[in-house]
Each structure stands twice: as C-alpha cells, then as structure tokens.
View 1 (cartoon, each protein chain N blue to C red):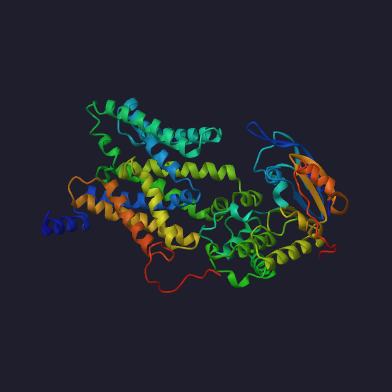
View 2 (view 1 turned 180 degrees about the vertical axis):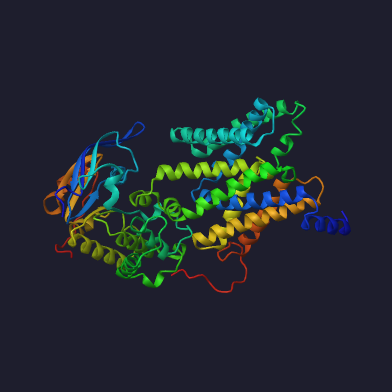
Length: 300
Length: 250
C-alpha cells in the first residue's frame, strides 16, 4: 500500500466519510474501554483464563441461537452467547471445585469442549444461505465494520450500564477483590459480588464479540489491565489507565482494520494493546529489563 | 460487656472431601482475654478461624459470635489475614488499606465522615506507620505490611479480633508493637484470638491457649493448660521440648 492511499483512507476514516467506519470506531472504543474496566478485577482475582474460556464458550451459544432462530436479531444471539459462556464458567467451577482436577486443566478442558462445539455448529451454520448476512463470518476474529446500528445501541447501553455499576461499586469491589475474608466480615456479600463479577465479565465478552471476535476477546480483558497494573499504584488510576488503553487500542485497531485490506478488527486491536503492554513492561519502574533509571524505588 | 462468649463453637466438624480438618471441636474464647490457638501443621488452626469467618462451611455443629450466628455474627469481627494470604502487588496504598477498615461505617457510597478520617489517622499513628500512608503496599517490608493490616483492624473498631499468624516474618520491633496493641485491645474489653506458631512465646504473650489437633486437646488459661503433657498429646508425642539450662527467661 502506498503512502498516498494510506493517507487518503486515514482521511476518510477520521472524517467519518463512511457510516460503517464510524460505527466500527465507536464499537471498538466502547469494547476496549469496557473490557479494560471489567478485566482489571478479573486479572486482580487471577481469573484471566476464566475470561478466555468464557470468550471461546460464547461461540456455540451465538451460532446455536442463529441456527434455531435463523435470524441475526441481536437479542437471541446475545442470550445464546451469554447462556453458554455462563455454563462454561459454571462447569469450570464445578470441575475445579471437585479437587480432583486442577483449575487450569478444568479451564482448558471447558474451553476446548465449548469452542469445539461452537466450531462444529459454525460449519453447519455456514451452509445456510443467510449465514454471511448474519455476520457469522466475523464472529471468530471480529468485524467491527459489520456492526449494525441496533447492535451498536445494545453494546452502548450495556457498556455504559456496566461501567456505571463498576464505578459506583468500586469501594466494595476493591475490598472484595483484595481481601475476601476481610470484606465478608465488613458486610460485603461475597457470593453476590462473585456472581456479579462473573455476570459482568460474561456480558462484556458477549457484547464484545462482534468487534473483537471470540478467539481474542479475552486478550482485551487481560492485556490492558496487565499494562495498567505495571504503571499504576492505586485502584482508581489502574481502572482509568486500563480503560484508556483499551479504548485507544480499539480506536487504533479500528483504523488499522479500515486502512489495511483484509485485516480483522480483533487481531488489530489486540496487537495494539500488546504493543502498549510491551512498552510498559520494558519501561515500568521495576522492569526486569535493565534501563537507566530516574531514581531507585524505595524499598526500605 | 456481653454475657455471651466472644466465640462459642460447639461440636464443629469441617471436612475437605475425605479429609477431616476439624472433628467435633467445642471451644470458647472470652472477652478481655488474649487467646492463642496452637497445634501442629494441619491441626486445623486456620480452618477454625476460617469457619468462624464463614469462609469454610461447617459440616456439623454451631458457631456463635457474641451469641449471634450467620453473617450477622460477623458485624463485630475484625479479621487480620496472614500476610501471605493477600496479593502484595495489589494496587493499593497503606492509606487505602487502612481506610478499608471503615467500609462498614461509611457504607459503599458515602464520603468518609470526620469520624472515619479520625479513626484512620488514629490507627495509622497507633501502629507507627502514619508516614507510610501514601506508599503502595508492594513497597512495604513484611513488618510494615503486618502493621498496615493491624491498623486497618484498629480503624474498624470491632469487639473480636482474629489474627492469623501475625508474627511470622516480622521484625522484633513490629512484634513488640503488635503485642502492645493487642494488649491494649484486650484491656479495652475486646476478645483477641491469634493463630500462633512460636510455642516458646505463648506463656509470655497470651492469657488463654487452645491446643488443637483436629480436636481440642486442651483449652484454658495458659498457666494451667500450657504444659508439657498437653503439648505432647497435641503433637502426638512427636514434639521435642528443649529447656533452657537456666530458668527465668524473660
């Protein structure tokens, strides 16, 4: 691609010449910010891999809902994805809670079963003439450009509601994440918090898959928070930086996907987020990479 | 203070799958006393505290705290976790952690009142860490982190303090400071229950002792309960008691 074409397409992108590009940009930014916010609690609770399993497990639900209804209506696809993702996290907790299987193995097994089932259903669904129309092709790797206005409205409502809830409840959420026993004694209903965080996580995954795709949605839940935790020392700044990195990755990812033919939004977003992580990892105050420091860290 | 004991555990059984962690434990802890819970590894010391906290489910038996059971029982309980039990890289400062002690007082949404700020400030000063208020906990020494948890407990102003091995890996100055604070709490009428590892310091530090090995081997005042015969029973005869050649260790 020549520089002239790049400049021309960039101009088209930033001036919202095409409505679909504007929708892609808004969707990607919202998804990035939401995943960054919710993902921070997930990473701090060492639940990153559960997010990965939940992400992959949306596939059979979404495709199954399409096969049953035969339409790309938003509600059944969301409900289907939410159903199987919650089922997968429940399976993980049941299998890992039995003490005979380690949690990492339980997560891997659950991910494989649900994703495998999803791929089987997807190959069946793709024989249907309406599959391409329904945007099922973009479901694996994300196709923000294919996000419709109703989808964008649903995404916006859910993202803003979840973000408002997280910010309103940041005090009990932080205590429950940091020290569950103490939180319980301080009157925080831990079961409710755990169920709420799992539900929020799953909802974030489900509304994100059109933009990021099921394969890489977990990366948007894990990478921006991990980056933020390298460079911040308090919860409010960690949440803000994580959401900011997520949103920026969404914006840049949407732009790359627009200007470079054939690049899906999901991988583009994830690569931008990963680049931010790499920079933070190298330049963070306690990086294992030895760089000249401004000042040594206080460790007394 | 109250008629009911701080902790009243009856016939408590806790199983982890096939493994019986606590087998019919009946024990009390009183207000105005410093109580040590000691026993060999795997004796169920932490399990007992976790059961009181509602962290592990009782398979049988009852647990009452100041005469109440269930979540309501925890209102007056203050928990000081084992240092290793929390993520030391969590993005919080010393001040953030101590302010957590005011969660029940301030609620989930309200701004902190003058009382809340005052309690936090007093707790930081009492534990001698006021100068560390803005330091992230990842940059604390073991002793400083333990003081931070103690300060959070003080800010909470409970009536029952549960501490899981607060003296492990802390410096001598911190140990003395913690002991001093615990004694003040006791003298103020609180009940203090500590899971403790160092048998040598039990007589010096505590009023009562609970010797545990899945079941209660012996419980009561240190002066009458903490003797070699009971220790041997708790450790199943595997304990070697070393005596100092001269008596009168302070």
